Structures are given as structure tokens and as C-alpha cells.
Image 1 (cartoon, one colour):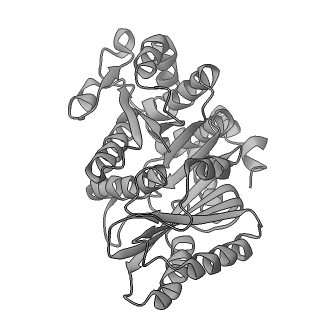
Image 2: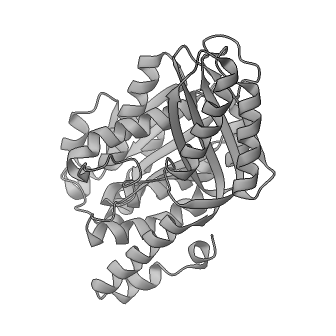
Amino acid sequence: MKSVLIGVGQAGGKVTAALSDFDARHGFDAVTGSLAINSARSDLQSLPLDTVLIGGATVNGHGVGGDNELGAEVMRDDIQEVLGAIDGRTTAEAEAIFVVAGLGGGTGSGGAPVLVEELQRIYDIPVYGLGILPGRDEGSLYQVNAGRSLKTLIREADATLLIDNDAWRSSGESLESGYEAINERIARRVGLLVASGEAVDGVGESVVDSSEVINTLRGVGVATLGFAAADASSDTAANVNVVTSTTRRAVRSGLSLPDTTRAERGLLVVAGRPDAISRKGVEKARSWLETELETMEVRGGDFPLRQDRLASLVLLGGVADSDRLDDFLERAREAAREKEDDDDESSLVDDRIDGLL
């Protein structure tokens, strides 16, 4: 799926850089353009991307200090400059735009929903949010910011792919020391999804194309992405079990929004050598997904790659039941109560969120 990546805020810029690098290193050519936007000049200087500094007249390049209302304000003030930079990167071949942001910080959580709303007015292609939720041990301000930002982003975007910062952290790895590793894991998983159907090594029996990704995400609200991989067997028949077991692990322990048990739609992408991908395994895994998710709308296909491992990538659109998301929203409300700010607390009680799952 030919995509334009727009990173907003510190985390959004770093994840966008990691995604762009992953795509370039593997020669997928799925990322057609990328840009990083921030109100803090220092956060932009180290990125190997074209950048736009916003809020220069307001915060003078020093950032918004975690104030997401100010983050939204500086994005609105400089929106024409931002849209001009994006327009030069959104060519006719682009099939989707991803606005990438950490939802806990000020510029990302405040600015990303504003940008998505503006992009929806201009472009006919889908505009998706790629939102990173703060971990459990991040501060109360991050929880409140993310709760506020999330409901607006879900409303404005065609779909919002959520990644819990705790989901892909390795055991014993602290959040602070593990940021770079977490960003690489995000890039690998989301990068494979975006590249599906774009650059293939060999000819698969049923190659996934961009329309299947777009249809899985069409009007679904919240989405989550699962991933698991294992060594392929030299015996194709044995790879039936490899495909089914990696698919189960992708859903039960590899989701970007863990503890998701139901969704409206699903897409299974099995990546690996064409001769190692078992069609019987793909069909069995797809059938299992239908039962597990309680939906008949599950697509499945191949992503031929020259590698000795088989990987299952599972995209779930229209998350209908997620204990992890419920837990996050409760943390956000509790953080608002601790701040003794009635306006903050009431802003996190909204039918668009509370009735979502």
C-alpha cells in the first residue's frame, strides 16, 4: 500500500523515521513520502527526514511542554505551512496517509487530530491515525493527554491503529531504555503491513494487495496489529502447523493492543518463501480467526519474501472488546481525578469512547 507517513511530535517523528528506514532497507518502496512535524527544534534536528517546525511565534522552538491544548493551537496556526509540505509528498500514486503520533505528549496528542481533520478535507485517499498509547508507568499528564486525544483522533481518522507502549516491550526492558527497540518493533510490524502486496520475492498463490488492507480498515474506528514468526520447515506439510501456531501467537500474545478478543474484520498476511507458505495452513488459520473473533469477515493471503522464517501478520479492524483499552481509559480518568480538574475528567467521559467497545 503506497503510503505517506507524517510524524507529529517527538515519538511520531522517531517512529516515522524508523518506518521509513525499514522500508528503504528492505527495498519495498511502499513509503512514497515522509515528514516530521514538531514544536521543539531539538527533536527535529537528529531526524533523517524533512521537517517542519511549528509554533515558532508562540514557543520559539522550545516545544509545548506537554500542553496538548497548546499543541493543537500551534498546529492550527501553522497548518498552511504544514499542508504545503505534505502536498509535495502526496503524489498520485499514494493510496493512504498515516499520521503517526505518541498520544501522551503535547505536540503529538494535540496536533495530530487537528492535522488529520485538515487532511480529510483535502484528500480523497484514506487518512489513518497511528497512535501510540503511553505505558502504565508513564506520568498522569501523559494518560490524560492520550485520553483526550484518542477520542478526537478516532472521530476524525478513517481508522486509528493503536499501539500500547507496553505491548511490544521485551521482558525486563524499561520503557526509557527500550524506546529505540520498541520503535524498531513497531517499524517492522507496521512496515510489513504497509508493504504487503508492494514488493514481493517470487509469486505467491494468493498475494495480499493494498485494497484488502484498506477494506479491513474501512470505517472501523480502532484497529490493532498482531505479529509472530517462527522458522519454516523444509517439509511444506509441516508448515501447516507453523502458520496456524504463529497466527494464534500473533493474536493471543503479539497484538499492539493486547487482550483484544473481538473485532468486526480481520486480515491475515503470511510472509515467507512462496514454496514454504502452506495454503492449507493459511486457510486453517483464517478459519480459526473467524471463530476466535466471532466474525465471518476475515481475509487472508501471502506476502512472498526471501527469508527462512514464516511470519503471521494479523490486522484487526473495528475492535469490539479490549480489556487493555478499557484499562487505559480508566487510568486516564483516574489521572484526571488526581489532578482535581473536573473539566479534564468530564472530557474523558464521552459516548464516542465509552460506547465504542
